[in-house]
Image (tube, rainbow, N blue to C red):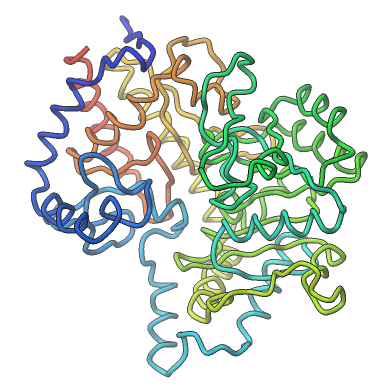
Length: 476
């Protein structure tokens, strides 16, 4: 079969197609277009989260249930974004909404400024399912990773932190370096730049970036900087960097090296926690980190996150160590409604673990194969990431990529985010807009499966991808 061979993104070969798609989408969703125009009068760019504000405008949602959402124009849209991958049970599942509705009816759920039983119950579940000794809750993954790094810096009395290039650890000072790929003379170091203005230059110099899944580079970087490192923070299943599972040897080596050099190992499990099992993904690798952060699926669709880990490290935030780390909490930390949702979500996933996760893994497998086949049938070579490995048996996460070389392995963010390796515009802009015209919503080429998705939904996605592939092919 003749296959589509893309050219690097700098060729601007999709400009005409994107213009046509944008024109068609304006006609397809005029109510969302009009509301976006109004929103831009009052909101920066028309919204409060940049990734949601696609060009020419995002769909404006009026309700969401299960695998589907409905926009201002009345379109029912099959959704694979699922609340930033948080809604593992689908949009507004009854197990969460019924618990919230019942509590609000009897006068419980909004912030009171007091402690309650839910904090204890949620912390107990989290510790039991992850092997952590102590927990403190906060409101976002950004805050959780920031506090984890503060704890590590104080505990080790060291200043530098190391992360994997392409990893997203939130919009906090030590997280805003090495996220987006930019070409560099050393092709293994394409993630050295800082993502924002306003940071002190010396702070960005404290963040060292290594290569995900590259054991040799990890060893080299620890030999060079290990005695200065407070921590190495890494996602067991990297999210924004391409939905790629860590190689088992990579995480085991990270554990060995952090022990050897006296640094802390932090697993960022905001995405992976409760996504592959009812607890942490680290257990699937047989690796226990010193600290881990959780959010998204744990919270059942409500704003809650947690730092969990060793008691001696976590104690730095408490009275025992005179609150040496100011992880004191904000107004909405451990919010009653959020913890009620978290308890319902975690308890459900623990109770139904043996049925939920095998089914999600199977759906993910079918989805990746279906999408690859749909594009292949039209002569366009597509590869999905999100496949499991010897540690992660299966995955309900997927991204679609369009590599120029069919033999290229996709095992690091460098492989999928470099526009000279994959057609990034086709994945991030063309595919998203073209599928919206088919009333399918994806993020970064696909997204997350939930227990609400069905085999029929996957078949529908495949057919839509087939039509989109045909449309793309006509413009090449």
